[in-house]
Amino acid sequence: MPLINGERWRHVFNHEPADYECPFCRLVAGGEGPVNGQRDIVHQTELATALISPRWWPNNHGHVLVVPNAHHENIFDVPRKYGHGVHDLVREIAIAMRRTYGCDGISTRQHNEPGGNQDAWHYHVHVFPRYHDDRLYGTRPYPGFVEAHRRWPYAQRLRDYLAVHVTRAHYDDVAHEFEQRSREPYEELQAHLDAFREQLPPDARVADVGCGPGRDTALLRERGLRVLGLDLSMGMLRVIERDDVAQADMRMLPIRTAGLDGVWCNAAMLHLPLADVPRTVAEFARVLRPGGALHLLVAEGDGEGWQVSPYDKHRRRWFSHHREEPLARMLADAGLEVSYVERRSRNRDWLLLRATRTG
Image (cartoon, rainbow, N blue to C red; front, top):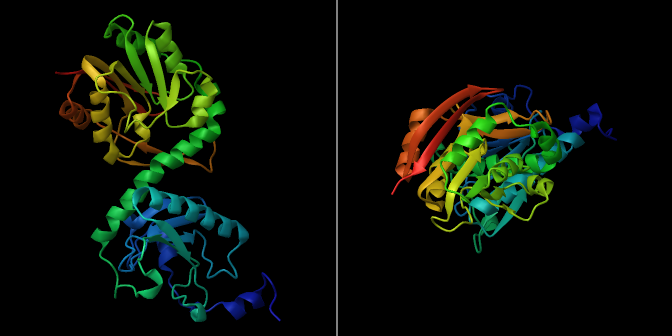
């Protein structure tokens, strides 16, 4: 009789060849697999990794595999910790699919042993987008593997969604600690606020986009401005305890065209995927009246990706980085003329641009 969690249990239910080279372990370690590569990875946590499957069904393109980061062959020997980690990530992927694929539902599959149709000897869960009458269980997958260039757009779509919403969820959880750590203005902030105020007419109407727990919102009000605080994190907004704040996505601001004299976006757009930045600055331009002012502080540098949170070493936030010339061109394309540039270094390199709405 097999021993639960013992050697004989694994011997009875495991079928991995002695010389098996696991493609999932190679990907998790940062390498390239024989079929999948790093660009197929959608999301990684401390315990699990999600990637676009290279094998597709005709009516369910872009389905995802979620695997534990440690090598365990099947459901019989995957430790409880990794099982929970995998299925927590399965849930995140399912939500992201429903938000970004336009599908009607989600199905999951998980196979064990040859008799259960397992053919990769590392525990994995399939997450399928489902559509009405898609006949998933009545069709066969395409022969062979789907080309990488067809998989990557699906990975990017899910990555971009998770970048924003995993970061938002983290800020929901750490809002009170964040408020305590950031309560005191940094050295240059008062000067930046004064310069912004000088660009605006008396009693100007402005939005603090990405207001967090409201430090800058309050400082702007002290300067006689009518300020609406906007943030995607409800946890942050609850810290403020005011009526003149609202939950909003800076990519789709709930403000009428030309309805503002100023937009203050201080260290907030840096959490957006780079692919979303052009439409975001276009949205800033849309809500500004001609002559309106933009204050934009971003992280300076190259690339984008996850960074470990200083509030919880097991959590990560998404950061994107910008260079002056490409960002200034993007602003100009949206109708925003840069009038001032400043750099500083404090825990990271920062790039400040002030711009005016043309037209």
